[in-house]
Amino acid sequence: MKPVSLALVGVGKIARDQHIPSIAGNPAFELEAAVSRHGRIEGIENFTDFDEFLKSRPDVTAVSLCTPPEVRFDMAAKAISAGRHVMLEKPPAATIGEAEALSEMARKAGVTLFATWHSRFATAVAPAKAWLSGKDITGAEIVWKEDVRRWHPGQAWIWEPAGFGVFDPGINALSILTALLSDPVIVEKARLEVPSNKRQPIGATLRMRSAAGVPISADFDWRQEGPQTWDIEVTTREGVLRLSKGGSEMYVDDKLTGTGPDREYAGIYARFAELLQNGESDVDFQPLRIVADAFLCGESVLTDEFFD
Ligand code: NAP
Image 1 (spheres, rainbow, N blue to C red):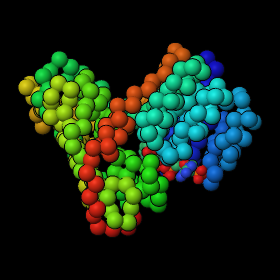
Image 2 (cartoon, rainbow, N blue to C red; image 1 turned 90 degrees about the horizontal axis):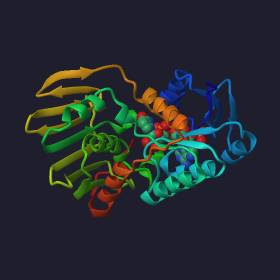
Image 3 (tube, rainbow, N blue to C red; image 1 turned 180 degrees about the vertical axis):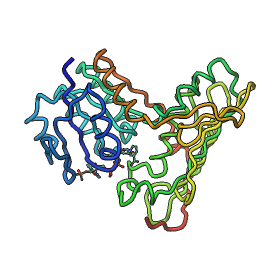
């Protein structure tokens, strides 16, 4: 079958680290164009303006948007109006309103919209979901602590409105949590620590519960130097499941039961190809809704200045 002609938009860290190699490794796609004001991809046509790209390359039928969330809605809306299929990096939009509007626009236009959550494709997430199936869950705890200076060097947008602050990585944990639990997750309380010289939180603790009443907690921190922690523990009456290293390792009662190579972005492009082939969309905004609710009901506390 002829490969899908694709453009990559926003040639920054994640586009270079993950999207370009994953597209190259998937014969279902042919990367034909890039759109970025400063970044370039050698060997294909490069544009600095998105409108110009849409006008000049009607043959490119799908776009993968790797820009920060603040500018994603306008680009996605234009692409959908121009009849292109759209893949959204996480988080899918800056607000729930934007995300839902895009979903509706794509449905009406008859194009595929894929709101990706790369962490859901981590090696141990599907086995963990299978292990939990039918078990009686009594609690869940997320500890997601990393060093913002190491993972987001020079990215000013993450501290600005719609940049998500520590929820930029935290939403990855929430995407795994909501994939593992069949019940909706409700935020009861949140505490957001905002450095006095920034506009988004550097730390957040959330108290949540499932609709059935199972207690869930999350501790997000961007100040962790040294070893990084990306753990989710789910307690059941039949044993304790722990996902470590962002979902790449699975433990049951502290015994390693599953691990493997990183295939997160290979997984999202395989899923995009499947959606395109079936003429379907995949839009789950639960992780975004939890973050929005944390901001809605959260208490903001000013903390020390932070310099990255
Ligand atoms: P990044 O390095 O800042 O790259 C984003 C690119 O988008 C920029 O290089 C910029 O390229 C373009 N852009 C367009 N409008 C922009 C604006 N108003 N402000 C800033 N950049 C703008 O960011 P990233 O780390 O790749 O993250 C992009 C998205 O991927 C985010 O939603 C993030 O949550 C997600 N993500 C990141 C990681 C990670 O480890 N970094 C992992 C998974 C997912 P031009 O200047 O050339 O236009």
